[in-house]
Image 1 (cartoon, one colour):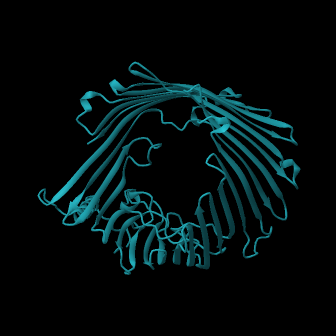
Image 2: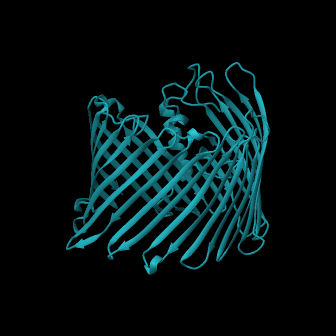
Amino acid sequence: MRIYSITGGYRLPKYIRWLTVMLMCFVILGNPSPAKAKNEFHLSNEFSTTYNDISGPGSRQSSLKQGFSYLNVLNVNNLGKYKGFDYIFNFGFKLTDDRANDVKNVSMTNLQGRISNKIHTVNIGDTFETFSQYSLSSALKGASYRFVKENTYIPEVTLIHGYAYPRWDNVFAVYEGRVPTVQRLVTGARIKENFGKTFWAGLSYVHSMDDYRVNTWDKLYTNNAYTFDFEYRPIKGLTVSGESSFTDQKESPGEGLGEKSRHGSAYKITAVGDGDPSRVTLEYERVATNFTTLVGSATPDREKTKAKWRYKFSKNITANTGFLWFRDNLDGQKLQGRTDYYKPEIGLAFRRLFGRSSAVADIAYKLDIASNNNSENMNHITTLNYQDIFFGFLDSDINLGYTWYDNKIQTSARSNEFTYNTSLSSRHSYNSFILKPAVHWGIRASRDELAVSSDQLYEYSGGFGLDIPNLKITSNLKAGENSLKKSTGQDSSKIFASFTLNYKPSFLDKLNHGMLFLRAQVNSFTYNSVNSDYRETSVTAGLNMQF
């Protein structure tokens, strides 16, 4: 099935495409009468308008659009029951003239219709079916069918067909005759059998085919993935799962160039033992260099072993240990040879520290090693977090971190980094008001040993929230500064302030939800070179309604 014509040939008129969409919706939902069906209809709409003002010689660095812009997001939801079937229909679109919100002025955000009697389920539109990690874990624009009959030995069956597009604009070709992106058509099937209550196994096949180049150098793929996965629970607290996949792929590297073929396999096995006071996870995975999956997920040329152990010494002390090893160059074809990565870690979590019921502390150490023929990096990462409530009302969150970047071969790459930040906040009720003051400050300092250079990033801010429940008003004001000081290079600072106000007036009480909101922010950027300084002021006002 082809939607576009590169040569500018036949293309369905817009009104026919929209009629097709509406027909699809009616087919899914049917036409239940009020006497036979129980329906729920919900509609939500949020409209906002924004004014941005950018000034200063460096204003071109801003990502904001100068002047006024608007954004409207509409979502429609209809669900109910009809003659033993549950149905649901979702539809949404977005209107905007700001490219920071969307690349199109009008775009469909979601379209889905689903009907099910708990045995047969049909879905059209946005399709979210997951076969397994290697075979299919991506959303599609298309259709799916699932057959599930519980408490029988009849296997579950799932069928899918659709396009691997992130946007509906691509499906309906609203780019005025242009091919917006390579078409990727996906067809797949999965059979899953439950062998009792402790073991199940599944087989899946996914075919992915690309069509239509946007550019002559675009690569097109045709991929077939054959996958087997299972899960087994031999005893209470122990789960063993695994997956094995083989792919056969053809690649067209560019227009007029010959095809290339690739064949590869991937498999992994995981064991999880969970029973107080311990939880252990073991995992092994090997993904061949030539293994490719277009709508699943995997990292080719990777062999990996992973282990994690969590142990509760008591209800207040927990230890977490882990080890990760992986390497590349499975086929031995890389000139620099293989690189091995080792990542052991250990951590302790304490609750009710110092006899305080609100005190929680976490300390962790991680070693990050990467080694090959040319270099050996060894990074030592230490973190500490402490949370507590002082005087019965002051919430605190303190973080400390230190990292030592050590290169055993290239000493010029050595450096260290220190981080610290603290947040304090509280909540107070006074008559009809709720007051929520907060402060935050922190520093990140890094030092290069050989260059004898150092950089410091300072952050501090203060905030004040004011809620008036009787008037259905919530608000928050925040201001602060981020300042970067460099021993070599350009210093910079950002002074910022933001304000939010949400108000639910009484005249919107007839709605399920109605709210007016106001958002304002100011960002002032300063650099060593005054030609780079600029200032952003943005104010947004809007209305959110739900029926």
